[in-house]
Image (cartoon, rainbow, N blue to C red):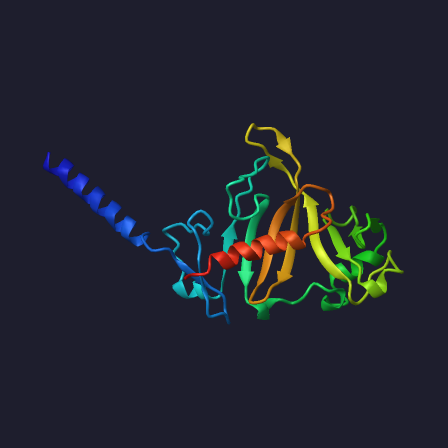
Amino acid sequence: MKMKNLSIVCMLQLSAFLSACNASPIEYGVEGLSDRFCLPEKYAPSTPFWMPIDPSEYSRGFFVSGCWKPGLHDESCELPPHVLSVGVSSKSNFSGWLWQDFPEDSFIRRLPTRAGTKIETVGQENLVVVYNENLWGSKYVWRKAEENQSSALSLGDGDSLEAICAQENAVNSDGTKINPTICERRVLGRDYYISYKFESNAPTPLSLSSLDEKIFRTLDKWRCK
């Protein structure tokens, strides 16, 4: 009986210890930014207790978990419900997503001239999609600069990479297989830059500025008071 009571006491003490450890939310920072971010637990990145992160890591940037699940949109999510994840980093780490920001020998710069590559215009949004199904499954969505719009099927300085998208395999909550279009986008904000993944409701996302604004607005709301 004494051993049983001792086990119960130990369990209660462990529970109290863990509760105390989790009582205060972890503050995250971004290198070069004085403000800190207090993430709600629902969106904070999960780390196994046996792999603690050096607290200094929380000052360099951070990762936010979105609410997206295959086939489900959580309308109660503070982030847009079709966002999978958001990475937040220092402005100094942003290398740019303009055509001239990529090295001339990079895959992105060489792709338009490779055999089998297709370049297609999309709607009236001054967008072009570049892809080569023989080389890679991703599609590169570019927005043409105003001065380059006369050469719609070629890319040049000033054109900006809007997103990189690909169809992925996923399984719905009911077990059915789906192929959502998952895109990645990078955006430079006023104080920091974000790299986020989201599900697009169309093969090619047309306008993303409003999505950018919603994400920045949510992140800024989480700045510690």
